[in-house]
Image (cartoon, rainbow, N blue to C red):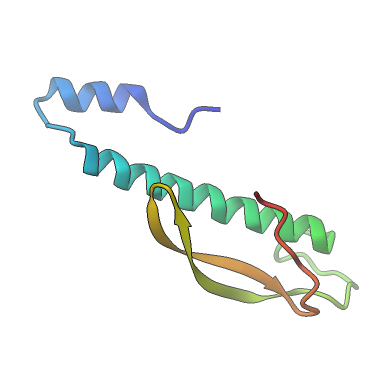
Length: 94
């Protein structure tokens, strides 16, 4: 799995646009946040046993998100973690 578009990077360099470490770090943090958000949503779907926006007889259902700050060796950024009505959902993401 590759999240980096090497062609876009090469095109930017060829066009004379300078690329610095801060821009790379910002882009990496953005990708890390997106992967985190997607993974937590998929985990909640697995936990509940049905897809988002699908009707279910399950009494436990999605109940919004909790905002928190994720700290990593690449810096800090805000994330939104989904929660369930019963409060039984626990992240398995390591």
